[in-house]
Length: 320
Image (cartoon, rainbow, N blue to C red; front, side, top):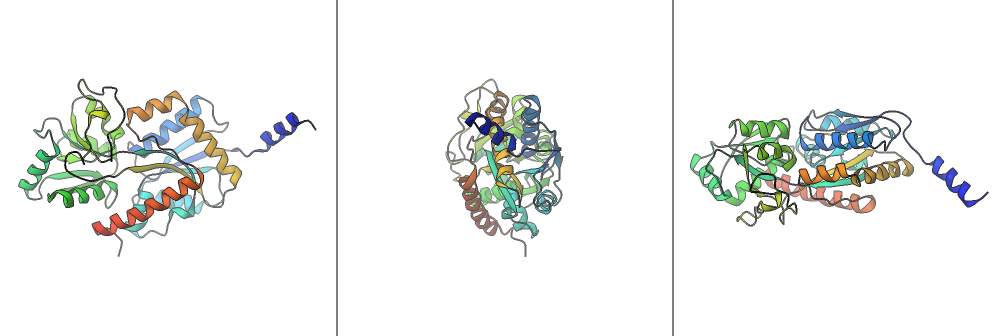
C-alpha cells in the first residue's frame, strides 16, 4: 500500500461526531460564558467545521452545578462538551456539590477573561478612589451588583473590601447581561463585570470603566468610545488596589472519553480560534488570548483550583 493511501485511511479512521453535539453552558443566558459558547457554535456552523450540528444548552442551576453534574454523569459520551468559568472551582467549594474538575476531561483553554470595575456614567466617580470614598461614607449601603453568590464577582468584591476598607452591599444576579442592565438602571452602584458583558453599555455612554483587575493593561487600542480603548483603562493596581483576577474560559468533555475524541475537539477549537470571526470577538470582549491544551492546560487548572481554595477560605465562602 502506498503511503498516500495509508494516510488517507488513517485520516478516515479518526473519530468524529456521529450525532448532534450538546454544548453545555453552566451559567445563564447573556453572560460571558454563554456569549462565548454561542459565537463558537456560530463559527463552527458558518465555516462548516463540523459535519454534525451543535446546540448550546444553558444549565446554570445551583451556580452551574446543574451543568457540571450533567457533564459528570455523561461519562464516556463524546457528544457533550462544556464551557467552564471559575465556577468550575467555586461552585463545588461554596455549595458542597459532589463534583471536581477531575471528573471531566480537559480539552482546550480558549481564553482568559478580564474583570473591570464599572460605574454608571451619570455618577461623579472618575477614579476608583472616588467610588471607594463614597462607599465608605455610605456605611455599607451602596450596592455592588454581581453574577452569583460566592462566585467570581463576590470574591473580587471581598478582595476590594479588604484592600480598601470599604464595605459594599453585594447583590446577586443570574448573569452578567442582567448585571449590566441593573447598573444602567441605577439599581446598583457598581459592578465588576467582564468586558464582553458591558461593552455595549460602555459604547453607548451608559457605563464608565474605572480599572481592570489584571497585572497589566489590556493590549487593545481600537477606540470603543470616542475617547477610550480597552487599553486606556488603568489596572486597579495602578490605582492603589493590588488585586489581580482573571477567569478561565475553557472547554472540557465528560470523563472516560478516548484520546481520539479529545483530539477531535482540540483540533476543532484550534480551527475556531484561527477564524477572523473569533479574533473579532476576542478583541471586542478584550479577552486575554492565552490558549492551552494537554498537560499545560491540566496543570494550569490544578494551580487555579489551589488558588481558588485559598481565595474562598479567605473570604469565608467554603461550604460547612
